[in-house]
Length: 116
Image 1: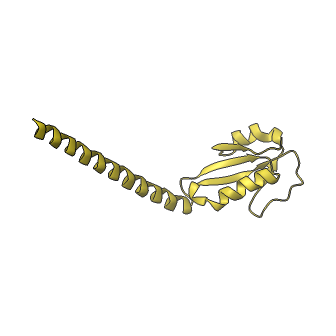
Image 2: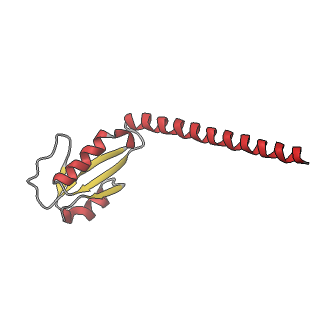
Image 3: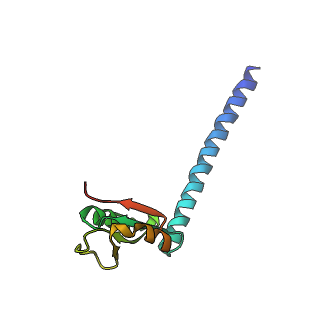
């Protein structure tokens, strides 16, 4: 009887180890596949940033530094149009245009980067 319990416990441990290895391997393959697709411009999420000041631009710069996340900057909304943005970034209008932007553009996420 003791041998049976020992064998069952050993089998369970081996099964758990194999399960963990398969989980880690499948997640690694999935992550690399998604990163490759995102670098090719597929499987992207579009993000609209509220606030074109230093906070909004710092947030956008971090997103651009990590393209593997698959977040594409759709543009900025701010009540102050005088902010100078990097090339490739668009100032889309003031904050009152948020509803119209959500209706007319593909926006998956909205980042609120407004000053206090």
